[in-house]
Length: 178
Figure 1: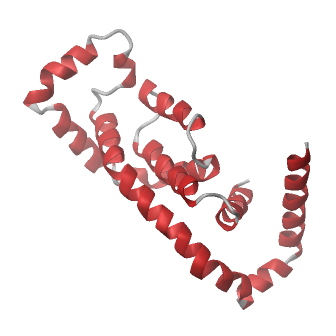
Figure 2 (figure 1 turned 90 degrees about the vertical axis):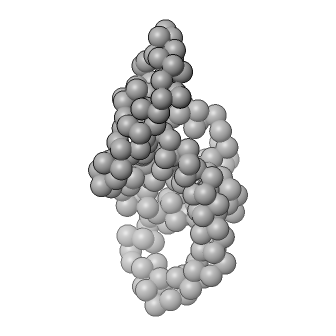
């Protein structure tokens, strides 16, 4: 399953898909990875992702990989959220939000959720630009080198890779027809 996702990710990177959509998927995946799940904020953002113009495969792969390493920066996110929640100028606003009917289910008053949300908002656009540039550079400089290298040719000669690429191309042609 994971190997198929990696093949699909490289297929997306090598395809003619818009770099901005791929970068938006990466950036959105990081955003969802930074915010702890199980609250209305995360669920709302997750659902919004289906209605926006981003590559969902890159978002889900980035989310999965991000959740594996997020524990290392949780203390930073918790500190940032605690700082934001304790700014005196926002206390009345946060109290008002908490007293609204549905908003407390977003868990915005949890320092880890607030920190993850704030940091993800700060990183969203810089990460989009960074990932977009990385996709453009990959397509311009790295893709053909890998494809024409001894390693790339050896990998493509493996029976499993050949069968997988045939299956993927067959699947895609059938999907496009029907």
